[in-house]
Image (tube, rainbow, N blue to C red; front, side, top):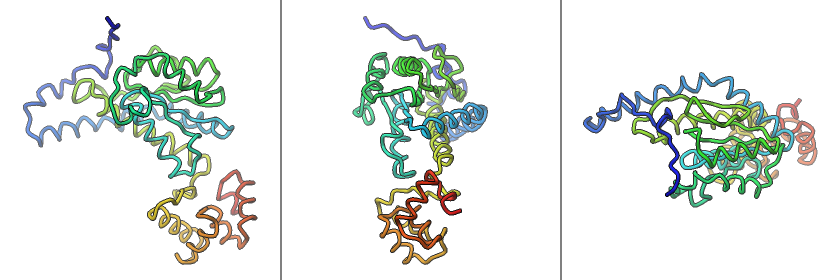
Length: 298
C-alpha cells in the first residue's frame, strides 16, 4: 500500500467557511463569491514585497554572471513555471536556455494531469542534473502546499550544489529551508484544495513580477518599451516599428526600412538612427553597454 502524505493541516487544504454552501447559490452569487475571495490576493503579495524584491536581486545577480533561472513545480505550479519561462524569449529576447521550467511528469504533464509525479523525490534531481544545474544557477521551487516531494528534493539538491534557492508557497510553514521563502497566504480555496484558484493566481502574479522586474534591471527594456522583442509575427513586427518611431521620431516607413536592414534588431536600429552610424558600430556600442540601450545612446 503506497504511503499517504498527510496534508490536512495545510492552509491550502482547509475548508473555507465562506463557501461551504456554494453549491446552493445562484450563478451570480457563485461568481460574486469567487471574486470576493480573490480580493485577498493583492494584500497577500504586498506582504511579501521584501522577499519578492530580494528574489529579483538574486535572479539579477545570477543571470548577470552567466547563471540560469529554473522554475520547478508539479501540477498547476509546474504549468505556471512553464508559461513564465516560455514567455521570456519573445518578450525580452532571452535565450530559451536562460530561463527554464521543470515540471513533474515532463512535457506531457503540461496538458495532462499526472498527479503521482509530484511524489517523486528523484525525478526532479535527475532533471536538474540532466540540465547541468550548477552553483551559479538559481532555482525557484513552486509548491502551493510547500510539501511537494518533487520540489523539496530539488531545493535540497540545489542547496548542495551551492546554488541560490527560492520557494513560492501558499502555506505559512515548510520543512524546506531555501534562501528565500515567498509565502502567499491567500487562505483556503473556494473549492477545498483546488490551488489552481487563489493560490495559482497569486503565484502567477509573483512570477510575472520576478521575470519582469529582473528583465528591466538587466536592460531588456527602454523605459516601458519592449526593445528586446523578437519580431517573429506581424503583430510583433508592428510593435517593433512603433517602438523605433517613438524613440527616434521617424516615420513608420523609415523605421521599417531600418529594422529590415538590422534583421529586426530594435536596439541596433534605434542606435543607428539616433547616432547616425552604421550597423557594425551600433552593435559595438550595444556590446560595450552590456545591452543597455540608454547607455549606448549616451
